[in-house]
Image (cartoon, rainbow, N blue to C red):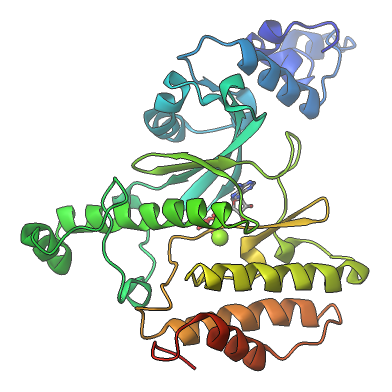
Length: 324
Ligand SMILES: Nc1ncnc2c1ncn2[C@@H]1O[C@H](COP(=O)(O)OP(=O)(O)O)[C@@H](O)[C@H]1O
Ligand SMILES: [Mg+2]
């Protein structure tokens, strides 16, 4: 930062936005405040985050959140400031039907500069995906990542009846699957953001992008066709490594693959399917492969998605299991 200290920037809105004060406007005076670029503000907040008191979560002015959203963010992310993982929430990367994703400044303890926080909406405010197809053959996981055993018949009854307790358990399981799958795939060398921590409604992971711009999904960029064959090959390696780890993504498409500086990161795993136990697993897998092939076909890469899917399935999934 040049002339302004970080504290000044955070406390005074006008310099932050680089706009003249109302009085300055009245007198048509030249604004006396030097313009500060958005990138500089964000860099300053990251920098301040590195020295902030350990247990205070900063909500950056660049976040532009309603008071309801701010309350929601604080309720779920404050704990990660107290445990010295995050220091500040810098911007909303995306608001969706089910979750918002925020770009956060990391605490120096984490060894990262930025962290992505995926914050699921409170159950009653979000549309549960039609998840029955994906839940077939997979146990319900509780908050410790363990399957809820058959002896817990009360919980199984609540889930079957979709009572409040049952719906809460389904949501917990949904988030557990996302987090546990990311842990497994990251350990297996698949291109996924590194998962860091999770809570009741939250997953923290490596942020892909920089303080100015998040990595866009493939669906949002005009990929250079010259890069397409290499990236398609990389995508197939990832799909194969996932299947070898007995994971079918279940919602794989150009919307859930981020692109940053020539590299891909696969995201959004709550609906994952186990090829060994879900009777629809092969159909879901083939659809994932087809969507990726369609994207690269438009860039001139030839493929035979049906054959590819069948070959990978036969290589990695036991013939006796649900399949092609
Ligand atoms: N680790 C990350 N780094 C940067 N941006 C991310 C990250 N994870 C998610 N995003 C952004 O948030 C968006 C939504 O995330 P996603 O997990 O796909 O949730 P949804 O269920 O809302 O589709 C993504 O399209 C991407 O723009
Ligand atoms: Mg998504």
